[in-house]
Image (tube, rainbow, N blue to C red; front, side):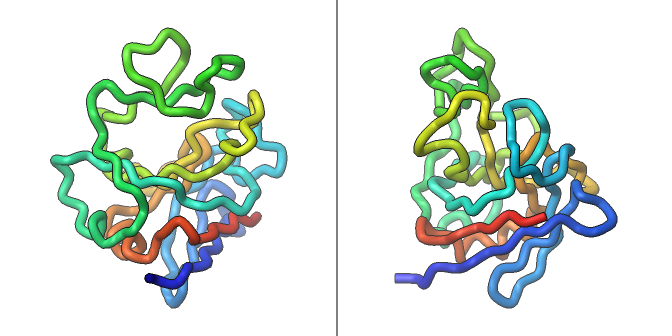
Length: 177
């Protein structure tokens, strides 16, 4: 069994929407939320939560060629066209996976871009789940140029490939300012 890896994610001093991820001997650049890192995370604020989180599962697109997916011991879930993630505070499925079409506000897991080719669900606001504290906080593939996220942590594909084999359900990710 692999040892748990401690990961620190810290906003850069010059741009709070970009970060440095340190895991073991690796130092990787990442994108953070357009609202920076916040201790008062709220739904729709675009901030990455100031928190310690752990990975729960690894969603992936079957047609994607990201090596490292199979080396991770996280539970693996192939993304289907009818999968979404509810982001509607007050809905009974808030911050949970849903089957599409879905009546309330949600995010599609099978996106037209590459962002969720590999998508790691983090346990932010899962247990317990509090209405409006933020939903769909993932670690996923970054937009070109490490453009800010809506509150997630995003990595370049090559860096995600390097990190995946070390992620397991005991990994702790400290998100710092």
